[in-house]
Length: 184
Image 1 (cartoon, rainbow, N blue to C red):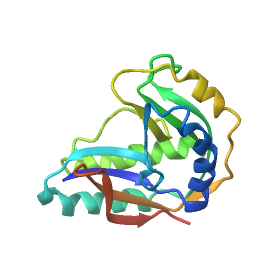
Image 2 (cartoon, helix red, strand yellow):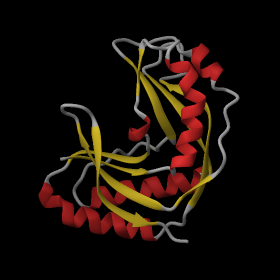
Image 3 (cartoon, one colour):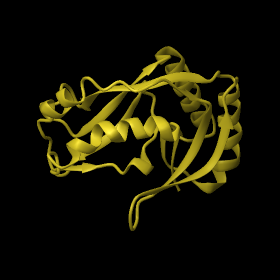
Image 4 (cartoon, rainbow, N blue to C red):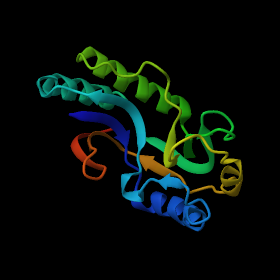
């Protein structure tokens, strides 16, 4: 099964992002926009994971989550991967707030996964909310990024870590596998 670990922002925070993005969808119809019901903030991408690793994985992820406090975060502005947006493949909304605490949580989640035999990515996470992807080849999305530069959402609390399963066919959808609270 294809898995990732994420923070699921509250509906009101996602609604703010949707309100900022909605007027830009039509002028940027060449992009493949991510449906708002799929929006999440990735802590660790785990890829294909054998079901026999799931019991140890969930135990380790639960322990990792229990060691970390809730995070106060917000969405603001936009950016692109890679670089400055001149040859982008992904457009994202920025995640701001307790960035060091986010980085420690993401590292602990990845370490827990690796301890269970799941080869989680070693690279530090750049917290973001993926908004759109380029369909075939990189695009110059700098005007789109500029159009979202003034966006600043209200703070929200990330209070749990979620293990999610990704189903790719016939349409992308995510299924929660398990969730663990962060410390109050």
